[in-house]
Image (cartoon, rainbow, N blue to C red; front, side):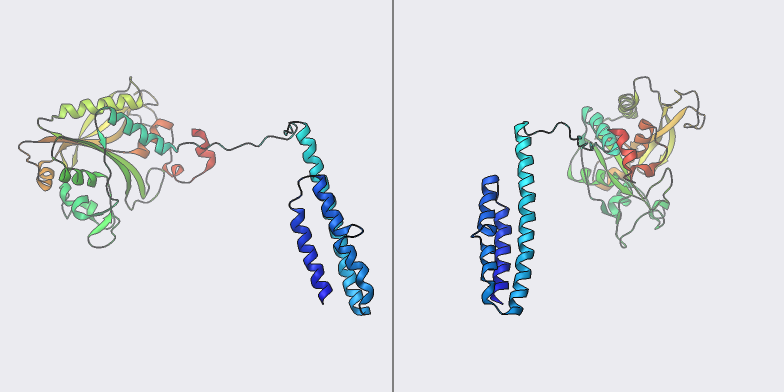
Length: 340
């Protein structure tokens, strides 16, 4: 029916023009055009007499429905424009409305801790180096003097992708890449993610973060390593902190040591955090094994060096008094908001 089609067109045109109304004058012009005495909808209602009874009944019903809808829409827009004018007179700001609280973001504690570690070593002359997280056995194990029968190369201790490639289990792989590309002197730190198939609990995760360091040059001594780590510990945990080195074994360093600091909770007196002995282990270190130099083409008779590595989560847990590593990864806003 042509009349019904025309009514749909009038409805569409009305709604379109209504969206462009910016003041009472615009609104009145729309009202007159569509529902005024000579308006579009009024004209349709007056023309119904020429239709058959059935068409008149259907078209009349549709026209009256539109008339009521138009009246409601006009009244709604009129009230909105009236409110806007009132706000403009008051300066455009309703001071009685409640404020909108914006949630503040912050740097994640792990990101903050890693940035601080990097900052300390960069101030000591180290530069930051990065490398692949998917690595070959040569870079992750063989070049670091980790033999085929070493437990860490077992499938239970490493995420293997295939027979040759794996997810790196430490950032030591970057040391090999750097030494292959650069002749001594070398002085770099290597931050990044590492992966090990550990069962997740309060102190273990299958993914965590490390920062490792490497310094290679002529006549580098163990005392240089001790001096660098002493500066790091005091810068990271405070000038009153004490540091000690305990003999240990790592395939890629010889001699090797575990590095402890005096407990930052009890100041070395003994507490639950340090298991009563007054010391907390924070990292491993040692002099680079000559076999590593041979693997990358360095002359072990000419060059010496030291390396160290630490878990960022371990450092962050000590700094912030966190007793469960899983809190770092759960994205619980209640936990993260403590670091704003």
